[in-house]
Image 1 (spheres, rainbow, N blue to C red):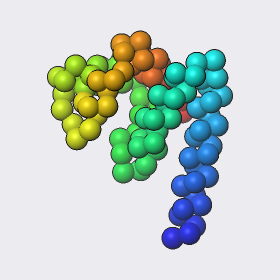
Image 2 (cartoon, rainbow, N blue to C red):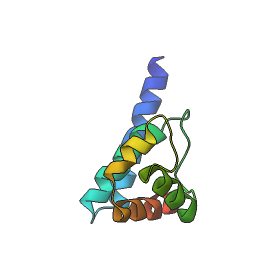
Image 3 (cartoon, helix red, strand yellow):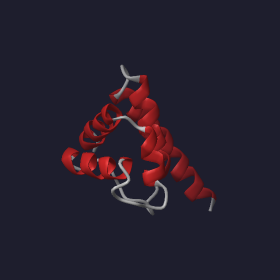
Image 4 (cartoon, helix red, strand yellow):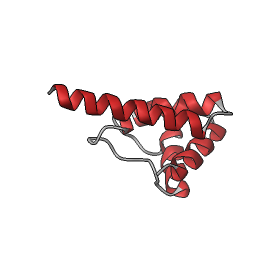
Length: 96
């Protein structure tokens, strides 16, 4: 159990460093990307890193505009602008 906690913590730290390096000139993108990864870094959640930009954009826009319902995504994405969604889709499509 303790070993798994260390692995998860290490992964989260590395992910945070990666996010800050790739989005260092955009604090809003850093904040939003870390918010996404607070859930999407879990193996139980859909993985968004490396997903094609157009697919990410379409999915996030659908949630944002209430065209697609989910447990929580349609509620969370209401707070994101089209610019935020575009930046996040670009960022996550480039992260491997």
